[in-house]
Length: 250
Image (cartoon, rainbow, N blue to C red):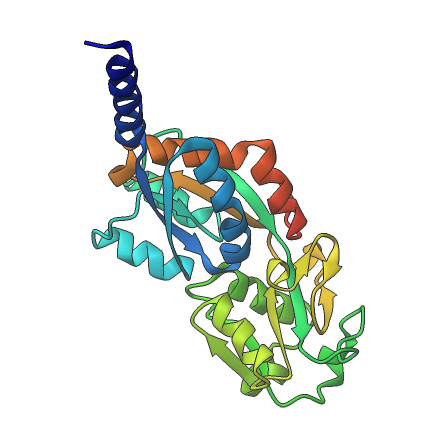
């Protein structure tokens, strides 16, 4: 066999091995983390050779889907209690759960200068519709109801609430003008230290319970190298820089 042939065969073997080692990971992702994960994915795929396939939605809905056998292998939730519950129910790889981000809630309007920096627009009560995510399915929606309660505005705003199934839908209500303002994830309207559109009040953390967002490897991903690689990549410096650029802390 000639040297050229041996070299060609070695190259083909290496290429085939590389493809054999590359895996795909199915990820359930809290809606608030859509933009950050879309920014993280190319770097993850380049660094590991694995492919990331993500579905975005409300944490509570994903919990139900996972319990009903959905093919997700990694879960990036919008809270810490849902992954912990799955852990207690034996649905996860032991020891894989960790906090990948701590979220920030914002009151946002698509209109520039509509919302003041202290959120007094809420108490002024001159708006017709206030968008929030479903508090039973979306942790950011639950946090929004806690803010309204702390401010003594639960009753005053009850008839004005426009409820989305996820934080993405709450954002859409405001962005399309169907609600003058709404509670959204800061990551949806913020990047690299700047508000990307409209006007907003960053809600003080003491007005609601901390939005600790945990990730966990689910049982379906326990033997998938791509699932473990994604979790490790999320802990690394490249992912951390992107996460923080969208207004999260760690």
